[in-house]
Length: 395
Length: 184
Image 1: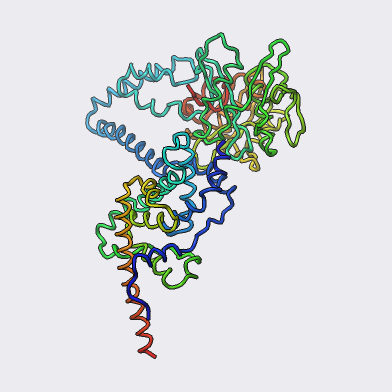
Image 2: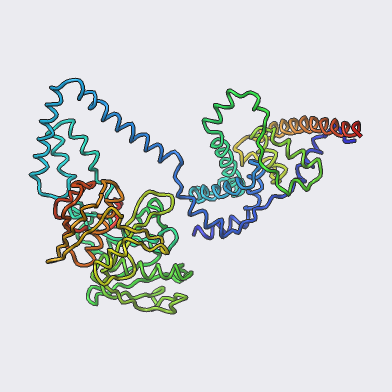
C-alpha cells in the first residue's frame, strides 16, 4: 500500500530527484541554426500585408464601380480625364514612368492615384541613372546566408567631395543591413584599407587574429569580395595584403598571399537568388563568363541550381531574335510571348538589362512587346542599362 | 565575437537552461526550439547586460520570458476562444509524449511530473528554479524579478498544489489496483 501523505520536505526531495533532461544536439548545429532562425519574420506579416493590400484595392475599386453605374455624367468626365492622362504620358519621352505620375496626379486629381499604384518603383530591383542624383554609387558584395555566393548590393551615398572613393567605401560599410536583407552579416570588414593612387593599388591590412582564414568558404569569400568590391568601385588593378603591417596574409588553402591581381569582369549572366524565407529576389551574376550574349541568355533559362541560383529568364519572356548594333541591343519578342505585368517578369527584364550591360550594351529596346507597361518600365521605349544591381538605400 | 560568447554561454549554462525550459513546456522538441530563441534574445541584448544581476539569473529570466511567450503564442485567439466555450476542456491537459528519461523512473517521480502540470506558470517556474535548477531563494527572486517573500509564498502554494494532486493520483491508483484484485 502506498502512503497517502507527502510532507513538503518529501516533495522537495522528489523534485530534486527528477531526471536531468539533456539536449543531445551538437552545439555547432545549435549555433548554425541561430543565424537561420533570426531572420524568420512573424507569421502574420505576409497575410497581414495581403489583407491590407486587398482592402486598399476594394477601397479604390468600389467607389469607381458605383460611379460607373450611377451617372453617365460622371463617366464622361472620367473619360475626359483619362484621355488627358494619355496625352500627358505620350508627350514625355523618358522611358521611366515614375516621375511623371506626379504630373498626372496634379492634373487629374484623384483619378491619378490609380495608375500610381500600378507603377510604383518598388518592384524593380536595380539602380538606374535617374536615381543617382548628386550621390555616389557604391557596390558591396555580400555573401548569402549559406556563404556560397556573393550578392552585389548597390547603394547611393552622399559624400563631401573631399573624400576619395575608398574612404567613402569603408565609411559606408558599417551602414549595411545585411541580415535585414537576408544575407550574411559581413561588414564592416575587420581590416584597414589604404589607397595608393600613384601605383594604383589598394593595401588591405588585417589584424593577426582575423577570422577570414577559417575554412575555405571564408577565404574564398574574402578574396572574391575584395576583388569584386575593388572592381565595382574603382579602377584599381592590384590589391596588396598585409597582416598587422607585415606583408602577406595567411590563408589556409592559398598559403601566404601578398598580392591579388584584379581582373575586370563582364560577360556574365545574371540569375535569380531568393534568400530562404524571404520574398526579395536578388539578381546575382554568374562566376563563369559566357562567350556571347546568346550563351548567357541560354544559361539564364536554366539557372545554376548547385549555387542556389534560379533561372532568370521566365518562359513567358520568349525572345524571337535579337540584334546588336553600336552597343544597342534590340530584342524582338516572339508573337506568342505571354508577358504578364508582374514582379517575376520585371525581374527577368532587369536580368536581361544587367546581363546586356556586362557585354558592353548601353541600351535595350524590345520590339513587338505583348504588353507596353511592365511595372515601372515602358517597354515601347529604348531603355538604358542600369547603373548597378540590387539597390538598397542605406542613408 | 558572437562565436566566443556562444561557446562560453553554452559551456556554462546550456544544460541548465534546457532543463528549465523542458520542465516548463514539457516537450523536448519545443524546448529545443525555445533554447535557440533564448540565445537569439541574449545576443540581441548582450551589450545591454551590464552585470547588474548575475549572468546566470539573467539567462533564467530570459528563458522564462521565452517560455511564457511560447504559451501565449500556442494559445492564439483560437485557443482562447475555444477555452471560453468549452468548459470541459479546462481540466484536460496537454498530451505531449512523456520522455523516456521520466518513464523509466519510479512511480512517485512519474506522478510528480504529471502533477507539475496542475501548477500555474508562476508556481512551476519557482519549483523548477528552486529544486531542479538548485537556485537559492535570492537567486530565484532575481531571475523572476520578484521579492523574496513572493518567491516563498509561491513556492509554498506550489507545494500545496502538488501535495493535493499527488493524493488524488494515489487514490485513483489505489482504486485501480483494488479493482484488479477483485476481478481476479
